[in-house]
Length: 136
Length: 187
Image (cartoon, rainbow over all chains, first blue to last red; front, side, top):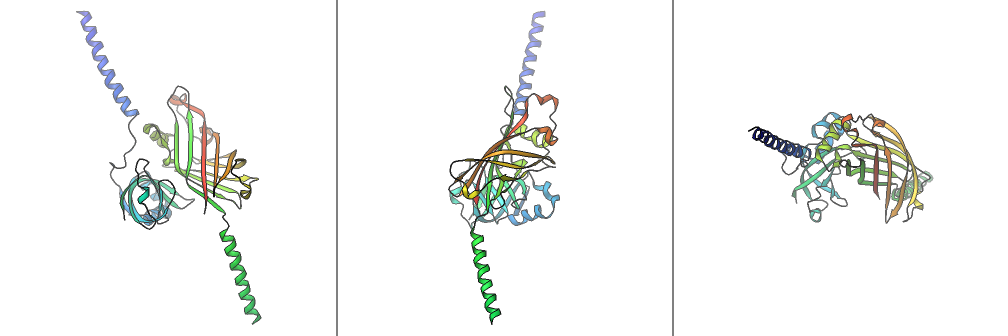
C-alpha cells in the first residue's frame, strides 16, 4: 500500500518535471521574431522616415526595433541583398528571400521590415529582415 | 580685357583642378560591414552575435577610418539571449550605437596590393556611453577596386561599464573577441 503511494508521487513528480522542462525549453529557445506575421506599426515614405530620425532624436525610440513599411524609389542596388531607397533608407532583405534579380534602380518599391535605427555616418535609416511587398 | 582673360583662365584652371581631384577616389565605404563578437565559454552555450549591416568609411587622403554598428542589428542564434543582451547588458534603447573612430598609421592606399599587409590602427571604440582606446593591427589588401580589411581585437565588458550578473558570469567569457571584415568600395 505504501509502495503504491510512493509510486503515485513519483509519477506525478515526473509529469510535473516533464512539463516544466518543456516550458523552460520553449521559453529559452523560442524562435526569432517573424517579420511576415508581425503587425506593421507604421507605413511611411523613405524620406519621411529619414526626416523623423534626422530631425529629432526623440522619435528614435518610436521606430527602432519596430516593424514598419516603407515606400520610395530605388536609388541604388548594392551588392548582395541590399538596396538604397531615395538615398535615405538602406534595406537589407531577409536572407531566405530570393528577389535580387527583379530589383532595378528607379523602381518604385514597398517593403516591410524591422527598423534597426539611424546611421549618422551615412545619414540613412537602416532596415533589416525586409520582405518585398511591391516592386514596379 | 586683360582682366577678363585672367578671369576666364582662372575659371578654366579651377575647373580642371576640380575635375581632377573630384575623380580621385578618396572615400571608401562599406554599407554591409561584417562584425562578429564572441564571448563563449567552453561547455556552455555559444555567446556570439553577428551583424552584416554595419557601416565603415575610410578616407584614403587622411587615412581616417570611421565605423558605426547599430546594436540592434546584431543577431544571436538564441533569441532570448539577444533580448537579454539588448535590454539588460548593452541597453540598446538608451545606447543604440557602437562606434569606432581611428586612424591607419603609416598607410598609403596607392601602395596596396592583393597580398595583405599588416596595418596598425589607433582609435577609440564607443559603446554603452563609454569610450576606450583601441590599438590593433588590421590585415589590409586590395581586391579589384575595393579595399578589404580584416582584424580582431579583445575588449572586456567592464571597460564599458557593462555588468554581468553573478548568475551567468561563468557562462560568459571575461574577454570578448571582436572580429571585423570590411569590404570598402570607392565612391
